[in-house]
Image 1 (cartoon, rainbow, N blue to C red):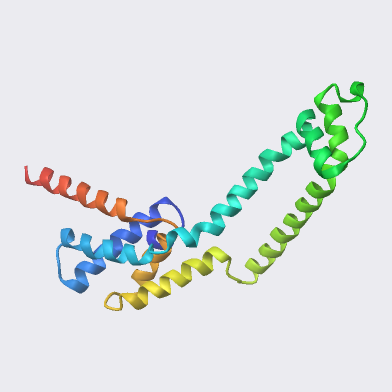
Image 2: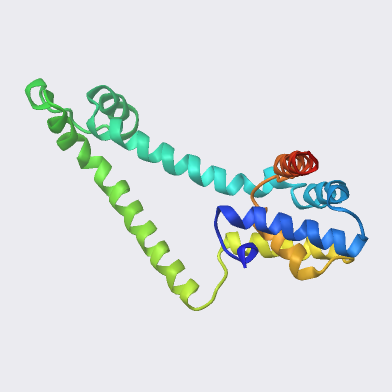
Length: 196
């Protein structure tokens, strides 16, 4: 059940389930699954950098735009430079730009159309996406996960496809190699403690 759920427990559960599937199919002990699990992970995360570029780019643009909007609206210096090169609007007299709110009142003349339009476009996109999700459409992240899962299941047909796919989907945006190594270290420590 945990391997099917979203959340922090999903990756650990999917990894453990994959280990046990390797033990069953390859008839090997728990410790021996590490090499095969690392091989499966390597195939699954082989193009991870390129696959996550759109998400990193979207994050950077979103955060950058949000941070930049504050000085573009409220900073007199930034407003004057932006006005000089991009807007060429008449600059109010010095007494009309003494406070941050007065600067914001002036810069809002050119900042309102792009910010308002962009906000409305994003709102419409979100509404449209939600409507498609309610109709059962897959999001780009879901398509990415399904594509990885199908590819990994084809590359490792000796294991139960459902288990391989769950592991691929759980680790679609994460290189799991470090956690695989950490799990086996913890397992070895537990085995040593039991034998004492």
